[in-house]
Length: 122
Image (tube, rainbow, N blue to C red; front, side, top):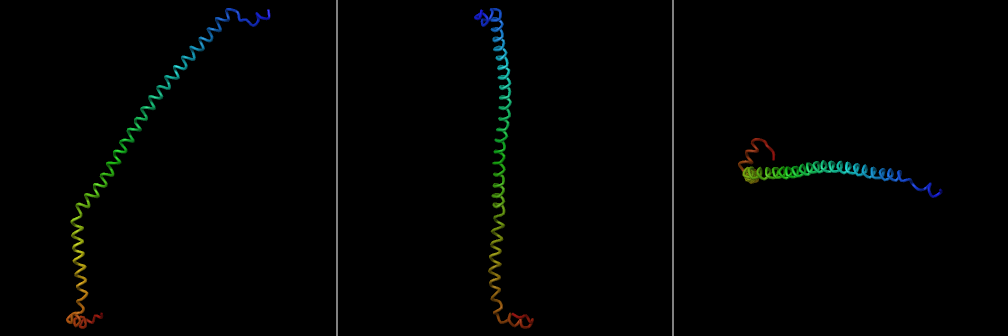
């Protein structure tokens, strides 16, 4: 009698097996649903990451175009303005030579007499 109390009757064996089969089946369904949700999330994340990567590529491209435009404009401006800069340099050089030549004008006797007449002291 002691041994019979621990033995499960045959009807309860079926119910116990049915219970475990149903739990395994339900776990399989839940696992499948979770995997499907994970797959959807992974696909959505992949789309978002591809958009981000595409945006970064376009950003890099436009950054390079921007700097090429800036450098090209600077070189083009220098090429266009270079004749004017050289002309200004030549003019400045000739004016400097002319001013240097005028400093010796005070030594001429006619200029000294003119300065005395005008009462301009040296």
